[in-house]
Length: 227
Image 1 (cartoon, rainbow, N blue to C red):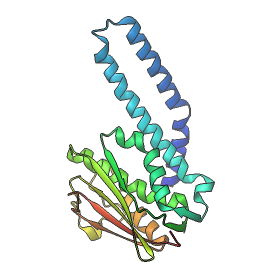
Image 2: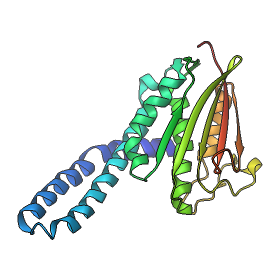
Image 3: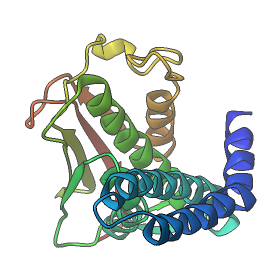
Image 4: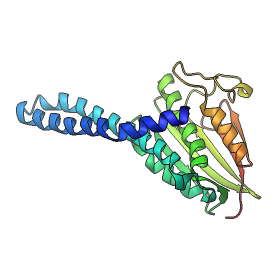
């Protein structure tokens, strides 16, 4: 139900609403330049720029949600982990940049791949990124960094997602339970989805309350078919 609702909202928002906001925003920016003096323009244009950034972030989330339900992304096949990570980070760039966050990648020189659907793997990564960004917001974190790395360990690929946020303030063994969340407006479903999806992919996931960067750190081990 949550997935269908999210996809419906994403589809509708990508159409008329966002287009109307964008068109009217451009008109507003043009009128400000025409009507106001040069000295008065910056104050209002700075506000329209903030709106523009927010629209970009909303559009990105809508695109990401729709991407997860596309038929080709739900087909099981060969998924290049490094490529999937790089593509998702590029897709979500307006979202994390709009929240003054830096994402750093440290990917294996090999190209590990698994048998899965792109949608399944992307849903894991997207949930973890969203959790980090939300933690930054709640804690008022200034140095906002998310680091994602991949390392080959035998027949597995270790994927680590770490951030500089406040860390995890819930008992580690409880964070995977549905409905458990630190956010007052959260659903408590994100990490449940992460755990269940990783298990479906034949892997395992663990978490540290305060990892190498000081904030939350998640380690995902997935069996690979090759590299």
